[in-house]
Amino acid sequence: MKSVAYVALGIALPVVWFGCEWLRHFWFLWFITDQTYPVFFRLLYGASLIDWGFYLLVFLAVGAAIALSMQKNAPVLWAAGFGFAYSLMRAAISPIWVPPFHETFVTIWACGLYLMPPIGAVLGAFAARALLGRRASVGT
Image (cartoon, rainbow, N blue to C red; front, side):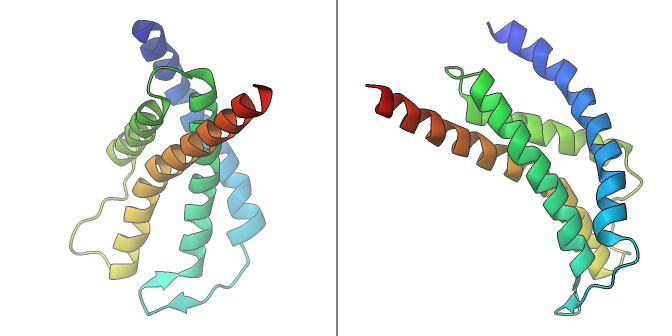
């Protein structure tokens, strides 16, 4: 069973990657392009929070899908692993690193981009598991 899960998640990773890149383009057009956002504490642009929100929402859905499809094989750990794998792949391919010579807000933005996928996936998996638990208890 685990080998099937490895293959399924290995196939899903590039699908989610390309899907995120495609959807993120529209997210930018709808919420960030031609908008002005405040700067919080001189460290964080409001647009960064919108960008983080995209990854949080996408990986909430991904984590829930993983939890619903892998009900008995530690789905929260699988979701966390998927989120971390996505972030590592993104960090390896992306030109945006977190070197010390960047402005502080760029460093915070980049760290948030790499943290949102695992956080969203774990929260989505927990939410799906809670929903499954309630549904199972209602049925008995």
